[in-house]
Every structure is written in C-alpha cells, then in structure tokens.
Amino acid sequence: LDIGAFTLADGTTVEVREHGEEAPESDRFLDTVRDRACGPFKTVLGPGADADHAAHLHFDQAARRNGSTFCQ
Image (cartoon, rainbow, N blue to C red; front, top):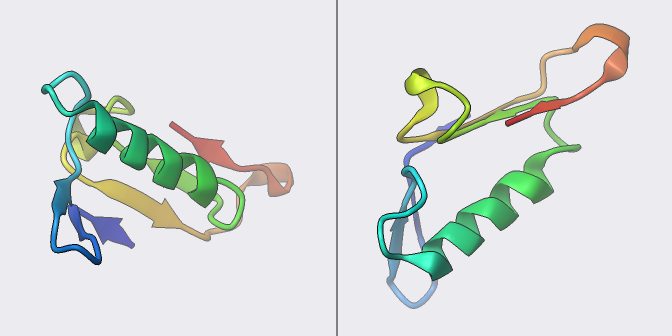
C-alpha cells in the first residue's frame, strides 16, 4: 500500500514529504502514522528511508525474516 497524501475530516490535505518544510503539525501527523503502522505492517518506509520513498509512505505485510518488522 503506497500513500502520497491524506485528506482529513476537516478537508485539510497532508502530503507525504520530507520534514522541515515549515509544517510541524504535518510532520507530527506523518510521524504518528508511520509509528502506528509499524507492527500491523511488517515493512513501513517513507521520507528519509531512501530516495524511492521520499514522497509517499509504503506499507506492506510481506513476511520478514524471523517475523520481524522493518520501519524507517
């Protein structure tokens, strides 16, 4: 599952992107989504993980070695 943006109930759009672009509340929201996804999903990648995930969050449930999770 790849997500490039979220539309909140109040109509606000939060785009997935690198931190530091003058939107600390959006950064906190994205950090919370990433943190809470780690566990239900076996792999969670997003901005800061690598160039391929700079503008979206990637979640998958593929089995990992030793049943571990990988979150960046």
